[in-house]
Image (cartoon, rainbow, N blue to C red):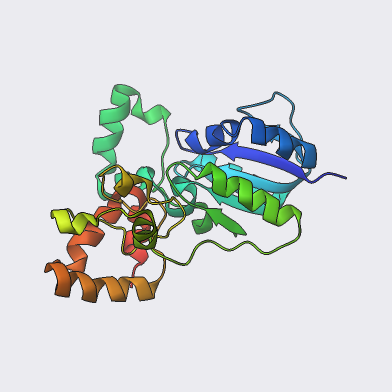
Length: 247
């Protein structure tokens, strides 16, 4: 039997789920190898007998909490897709604000109708088997992940920082232009798309590992007279939850 696949969304823009639909012709090849049994963005049928469940979005409401526990229970393998699911994403910005202030700003006098909790990644609530980070998730990486898993191999995320991809692409380091960038500490896999267009890396794929942090701290201070803590402040954009867990 074909593996039974489901794609779910919690609090998010659902851009990572849409990225799957944007695979277009490649999606037809996937459909030849798997059976999609639950996908709100693409079908009306529902089944809860799931081999691999993909989830985008952060746990940011009481309903999210119930849903992710249900998804975990129904999925043999659970995969977090996108920065919100892997690191809390933009949703965690509210964790640094007074709850009454942001609820009033967003919902006005109807705030009581929309319960909320501090935002966190899926792994803050349930066990997650794999993560595909990014904002949005890199759809080519998703495709490669599916191929690897279906052939019984073990999936591994890149262990290099984004800087490696910049060098490979011949992109001038933004620090040479006086621009602070999270490329030295962020996990590669996006082909350094932001620096390639002159925009700094803001860490949507998460910190690659502790060794990268240590090396970046030394290199940035020695080469560019930049304090690593000033750079890491930008992690709040896509991973405020992650920022709290750094050593």
